[in-house]
Image (spheres, rainbow, N blue to C red):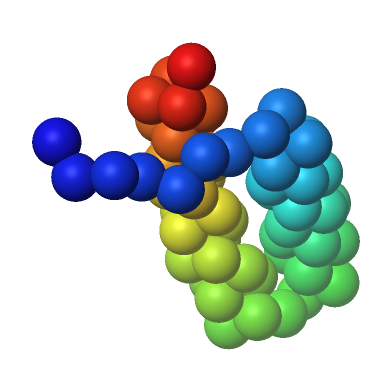
Length: 63
């Protein structure tokens, strides 16, 4: 397999914190009546969840 950049648990924590913040932003934007902004945050949230899966994979591979 190709070498992969090692990840630390701190990387996982940072991604999870970003996901929590995005969820909060999505909720607030939905409540405030900003559907396009909420949709953009939903898209960013899906991307961040993919990043979380990726960092988990990097942590498993670097053990």
